[in-house]
Length: 547
Ligand code: ADP
Figure 1 (cartoon, helix red, strand yellow):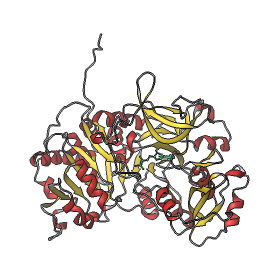
Figure 2 (cartoon, helix red, strand yellow; figure 1 turned 60 degrees about the vertical axis):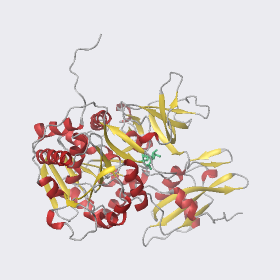
Figure 3 (cartoon, protein in one colour; figure 1 turned 180 degrees about the vertical axis):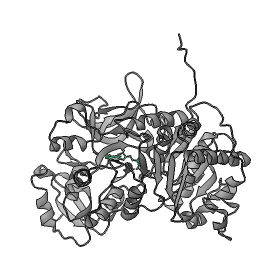
Figure 4 (tube, protein in one colour; figure 1 turned 90 degrees about the vertical axis):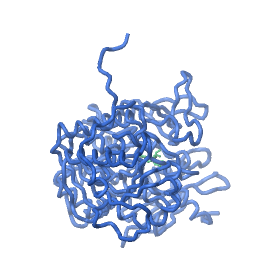
């Protein structure tokens, strides 16, 4: 017997319709590429998203055709999020930090028909447009009078002229909630990038889940700053969850330096911000010497790579901001776990609470996870045993776009498919998961594993260290030994011996790195994560001092 409830597809357009109707005057503030601040409301987004939908109809774009963006976090990008997906097309957000060759490669692979770009990326588009064979329409996200006269880009139109010619009346179509809504390519550190193709259903369910109290706890009382880019995994789903909850949205545009982010947080009375550790590091570096404080910011989600304990402490002790450690990946829309305490933890001393906060957190309903050994058997949830982390759920990929890379899922005895995350982790009896490492970054020394994350966390707790990356180097006896590459803070000094001494008592002796290599910079990938592959290449002629 079937239930007798109404069946209504979960569509992205319904989020926007809800926002317009129920919190239409909710504010959306953007720092524009032009540098000024732009303000309007959910009502305005809804009207302009409908113009986008009409404009796409005018271009005769078919259902599921791809519309690409190369843009910062801002209101026009938000309109495209809803206008493109809402009208049944697929929004392809491209990461502008990728190599131009890679940008052209993925635009071709996705078969993008339209590409909308911020003026910051004009020269990038001028360099790659001839290689993007499928793109027929180029839209510059600017006013008509800002369009360059002779850009060399065929059929270049300004966004404002493009949508300005359209009506703001549009009836959002109803279709299967499993239809594709947006796509995002993984950074492709090995081989060509592969795309996760999200659906309306997966996106809407993820938006619900992200707003839950033990996840991001979003509400109509919040002022939310997504520093995480809308060009990578939909800014962790925040644009959708914002429409669902009616929080104020504050977009930083291209200005991600510490001062600009701080000024925006204060001016817009931001209560909640989300970003990767590298961005927060810039913010803290700006605030500390000037003795600045936050007036309303009370919590921040930090994820994308492991959040160093020093950062959690600084936010909490110096600024009264609760850090919520989060873990996820492109293939997971991206949220998998968030770290919030349970009732029974509230009476624990601070250092005990800190041990929990450092973990990547508990699974969100909708994400099932387990760790397995080499034989594929599930390992105990004891907080000590580590294994390969597998996940399944309605917002996790089943396969990549165009079947790239074959069937990625691992089947269990019941025939259920699990996605292998490539992370090595522990899960404890309370359900808290902790990443030990990415499987390819774990250092194997004398048959034992060393977590490069643990080694890096200790180094960045040293006051003279700005950034650190740990890699394994070949060793005749131990197979691999860890070394730590370190970037010093400007004006700060620390010697190799001092830093190695700093490790004493903080980790097992045999896990202390064999050497410290001081470098000017550590290579970062397109999503701000340390590129260990490139670092290994840079240090390929390095020899351990003892050998
Ligand atoms: P990529 O395109 O590089 O895969 P993702 O954003 O999908 O970019 O990266 C996902 C990976 O990032 C995870 O598998 C994990 O290794 C790492 N990661 C994400 N969040 C955390 C975290 N809080 N702690 C440690 N590692 C993390």
